[in-house]
Image 1 (cartoon, rainbow, N blue to C red):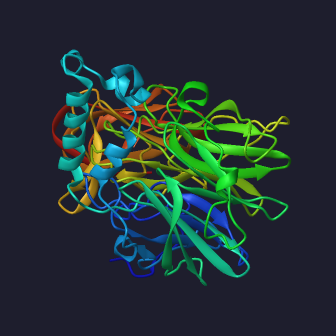
Image 2: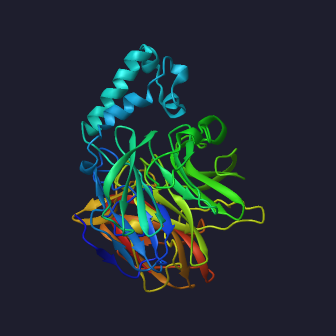
Length: 454
């Protein structure tokens, strides 16, 4: 249980401590001037999310507070299990051709020897084994209106609901079920005061909210706002407005897995939407990385994309990160890479860069606990870890620390600039500047990396 855990002076990625796993972050700036992050809460390598939410907040992108539990599944008495959602998603699927795109891509020859009903049952059994009858809270969103805060949530049976608080961090109480079935709700209030609600997987849905924010105007429900076929939409709806453009941000499957955050734009809040491209791709953060989910938000004059990265060689145990983003004159967002520095400055001489700051891990390496410390593990010859970005001078030394032995090659922007061994100073030969640092290992013997001393 987290109780107002304050994190000071951190502007680097991940934004929160390495043992606080808040993915699916919807970022909002409310009337008190603070930025709030609403996300799910990972607790296991075996299944997504958990039965509780926590809210993270900051007044300045430096000082972070993680709230005590803001909502729990048990408060919503109607909720079923993850297996119930799996069955709901397969309703109407009567052939392999009707499967969602991500399942089609995973089909094996063995799968296709089965009848569609046998395949569906095997998939149900897999889902049930992963999470059993645990009742989970998936990705939420929240909004402020007339001094109250409305938390919109979805559950492992595909149901959705809303709860209310007089504080942005909750606790949220008195949940009401909504007339929507799916996952990943998003909420948005337009300039004219009309509130909208978005949800869905594989095909995005939208509707107007009633004035009390507690139900949908069912006559306004619009389906197919964004789809897999036309927009690479997988899940994770998020809506923002900038100028006269509406930005529908979502988990984007255009590169084979939904590791991207993509976006589509429209001139009205219910479309039609035109696909515009990828904002960020987290595919290199962990060997098992599968999905991405986040949002864009302006805070103190700067726009950011908030997203998550996996750890522990798992699709789960995800951590919230952010990057600065920029718009061109047509309102398009340039794709940005994952970084270690996040909203902060490049790392510089004298700083200790923890292993969990690495934004790219290649060659099978991943982040996991080693003797109680978050380290880069499963290092084998040729594995790489990347830190974006560091500020260095010619002749500056760097020391990669950890257990075991390995030979190291250090690259600055892909150019070899130093060689040596674990736990020994290595001298850079380079022009002064800001670089991407790549650490490549060889001759590895029982090696774990705990961090880098610049």
